[in-house]
Amino acid sequence: MNYWELRTIVSKVIPRMTQLHLSKRKADHVREKGRKSGYQQFNLQKQEWESLQRLLNTEQVSSFVEVSLKAQACPMPLNLDCYDGLKCPYQCKYCFADSFRASLYTAFFDNSKTMGIRHCNPEYYKTELDKLFKVRGKDPHDLRNEIQRSVALEIPMRFGIRFEDFLPMEERKGISLQMLQYLADANYPVMINTKSDLVGKPDYIDALQSNEGGAAVHVTMITSDEALCKKLEPGAPSFERRIAGCKAMVDAGIRVVARIEPALFFLTDEPEHVEEYMKQLKWAGIENITFDTYSYSANNPGIRQNFVNLSLDFDRIFVTGCDSQALGSLLLEKFMDLFREKGFSCSSFDLGNVPTNDQLICCEVGDYYKERGGGFNYGCAVVAARFIWQKGRGGKPVRWSDFEKMVMKRGGFLSETLKEDVKALWNVAGNQAYSMN
Image (tube, rainbow, N blue to C red; front, side, top):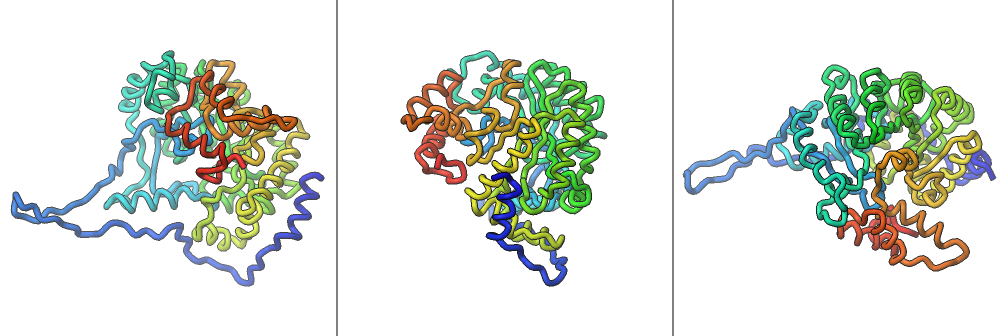
């Protein structure tokens, strides 16, 4: 059964939501309770009232390199974000990151709503990275810090995980460009996640191309339908601009991976647009694609209202691709097969499809970084799922001790806490989104 046959069957099982009238209700992604205003505390020593405020630096990102909270599942969890803000200018209707930021910042800071888009201090980042890079070449087993172990393993640093790092203001300020150039000089591997075409401009291509440690770019393009792109991603560059940027990078020898995340079944999968999408990827020279189903984090009244305001059926998309996890995995498998038939290498972070991914690393960059000396977080659920699938063929028992031994040979777990998290997932416990069931 191919994707189109399965899609037809599913369309009869999960009905469409009928919308009888147009809605333009405000889509509030989160109820912002905020902090108490005018809060004061009496200082007994000074015998006076003091105003207590927790203020966010609204001009500069003060955080640094981090290991993702999804490290128990992700082979590439080392993040280096250069920009941040309360709201992303791309305004993607399916994105739930803005709601997380709004909830976090309004809960802990008194001045978060005055924040626009802020960026890091590149000189501070470079100084801290100079210190951190002293662990390169050391045995990861001898290091206790998750970040130090990640660097010792040469796990690529990822841009654009929490916020878009290549917005139009980046072309003026060049903050991300400075960091790319610094990492290129250090020959430390990098990977970019973006919806921007800026990375296809000459200065950025030069920074990526000159990095002997490797530089790969994930470009999110969920459909070739320009009209739908404009609805779903009103502030982002067009599909045409993104694909042109991709071609410029591919022509320069940079690994470019098309990213269909989220795959929105019954919306971004119309046959003529899927065919055009593959045609344009071929034109650009892209050979690798990574996919994922819709995250359960999108189960948010504000996200749903975004779709309703556009007369789009959020409920059917969500139930099919996310709420029914097994069904979403099956649909995604058949959807990826359409691209495989055309010669594309396809992988997914969706654990239902991880065992049969075309690459061990679900970002479709494992072969690329490995030949350049890059490393990965092998002690994670994605690698564990592949290990179980490959070693358990023919009904053979697969033991945690065997997996643990393999991970230790490849640099070990990033921390004891992560090791216990992955072991819990192995035993179908812990975070069920990533468990080995």
